[in-house]
Image (tube, rainbow, N blue to C red):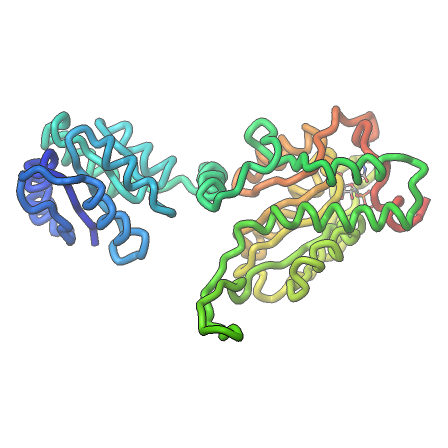
Length: 362
Ligand code: PRP
Ligand code: URA
């Protein structure tokens, strides 16, 4: 079902479009305006955007004189991606790249035949989710009121530059920091990073009674999250995240880097049965060549997991690039992007071998 609305300047084109939709047997709901008497477009933008936002209608079309006012108003609604399209190319991209759920047309500029072509393309194109979901995820973060959290590393990773995190990592880097302190710091940094990484967890409303009154409050909804450390070093991050969400399920992926080939080898994998329904946060403190993380994400995907985030503490540019190239749909979070890798694929300056430092094996 299409929701459709206009103001006085879009009224004539809307009527043409309604006839066109009827001819093509496309069901619609007309939210007005019902005449070309002067009216205020935000009212109709709001009716159509609300219907789409609440899933009462799958998509919407809005028309005003230039299309600009309707776009601005509709895009104020959370979850609405309204695209003003003047030609076929924009219509195609609005769906492919932006998954626009409202099409906006310019009643005083766009001829009706062009409008029909634009509508046909926008209705029939497919969203290229794999490639563009990262960007649309970033838009959702803005909607949630979240900053981009520190810096955005070349559009590929979120880098947490919070002073507390930076301070703790500086101590972790020091070769004189002992195993006990290192372990505590990994846990603390993981908790601090986890606060941001879990920002998109879905909430649901429940009723509670305070000592004063009944009210509706928000709580994390049902099956929501799982943590999957890459063995061994990822284990050090689990407790920090459990501090935030003690009920989360934990999976494990065992990988080691073959020291000759530097390629990841899987030796263990056990995930929660319902991992495919959860947001899975993959944990590994070091993202060096990216081979281990990319392979682990591949294993998760093979087992049906769709919503994956990677959380590392220190990353090399090479690792970020590899994971982003192999899995553009996976958000990468880290706390530092270091300079490079050395000949043994260790991060420079890095902190050495995270597994050995966590478990005191060297
Ligand atoms: C380390 C680290 C990562 C991997 C990163 O594990 O914990 O899993 O290397 O390197 P990559 O990005 O080049 O794949 P390692 O193989 O040393 O195993 P460990 O955790 O058991 O020490
Ligand atoms: N794994 C580590 O533990 N440290 C590095 O620098 C690279 C990979």
